[in-house]
View (cartoon, rainbow, N blue to C red):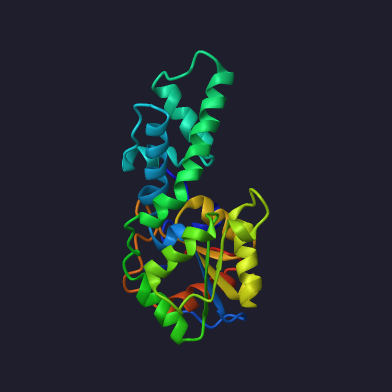
Length: 259
């Protein structure tokens, strides 16, 4: 089972289970930052399809189902996922060097195909997301999106999911140093919005993303229907709830998203 980072877990329940009101904290909520996976299931709905196309391009009888791919996401590096699949199927396992070469070739092919796959992907916003972002925009809370994908497809996808004019900044791999972690994207988004981490809140679609957000001082909320205890969507969530979460995280003296 996927584990939630320690600082996002307390007493076995999360902040949205609590009806207890919170007093205003010393830091007002000025910005909310979403990683791309918290907006939509981009991994299974996009990256998985690009990998399947890459396997086919190399003549390999491998097709990842959504369930299989989600299990492999426990391995943070995509090369580890491909290698694990090939080993499980007994493909090119007689020589470690040849296996690494094949894995590199598959991942390179996937990277070349990803832009086209993502631009054509039929992805939907998580339920309640647009309402929450609109509520934040109306309340004067800056909204940013971060991704380690390329701007060529990330920006069109963000527009597809939430429309135009609501997101103040989008930070992608094109804005970062090569192989920079998602935490660097969170840090850049905050700088572009002029909001310090202690006045901001992150929504992430994976435990790795949550760790990256916390690494730069953000309080974070995990949105992942596959993880017990995490939010499945944004239904009924409003910016006042985000403000309460932010205040409670400061009252507890940490950057937790738990109650």
